[in-house]
Image (cartoon, rainbow, N blue to C red; front, side, top):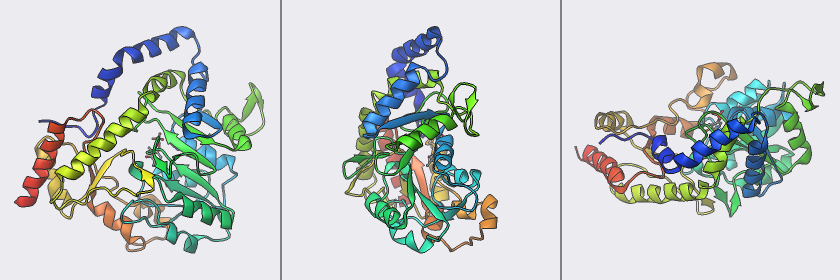
Length: 367
Ligand SMILES: *Cc1c(COP(=O)(O)O)cnc(C)c1O
């Protein structure tokens, strides 16, 4: 048996005709930039999240950059986030000229440890980027409370968490703004790059609309230095088709994650923890194992693809040497980076495929 981490072709097979029609219709419509497909997706995702505005942008990274810019974050400012995430969560802070300040994650949810945020707040701190890692939301009550007391902006990095919930509220609806990615492997993925910012703040929404379009409200009249960062109309047409299935797909991921939990009972793997306040949408199914490298080698040799998320915590990345962190500073993230990995999970995976993976892990543990 051969298993990919994610089988995008299997998903395409289930929606092929709709996708072809949507793409061809868009090409034939003659609207290629910020047309009706982008507008529809913006409205539908804003409504889904329960917020006023959705602004389609070129990718999730730009969603973060434009949001930081819109809130006026830049040179001299500090932004708190975690080191156990995709690089863009911190890279974007650096891109706007601010400094990322890393707070360790919780050993169970892998999200920011809210109890460790306040000790890192200084007079320069402007924002917290709360990363809903692997599809489970951060402890938003605690984060919003800290932010309110210290007058900080909260940006949800919801790139891995569209449809996830915290106390019944959707990812993207709690912070001052939130960022989504439609990178092909995300739970709502296009066939190329894409992203979106959602917010209830009229002024921020307006600024992001301008920033994505060369700082312009009216074509050829420029009020600020902006970017060319728009969600592509053809990608939006594809995403409008896929968005109809997002709950179905997220629920299937969750069910299949629970199947793995059962199958892996009694192995040496630490299975994912679900916070009872949250709906986890399993962007990735992440395990911990004390002998990760050998186990992954064994799985790969037997046709099972795996992924390491994330092998180097951001505070120990070469590019951030200047920030002055040392090994041991953020021990939970460092421990996780040595132990965590993903096994194949997607809505279309079959029980037999999951059993094959689990049986291999059992065999490995018993040898
Ligand atoms: C994917 C991702 C991003 C960046 O999104 P792109 O669309 O690839 O630019 C940012 N943050 C997190 C947590 C992500 O997983």
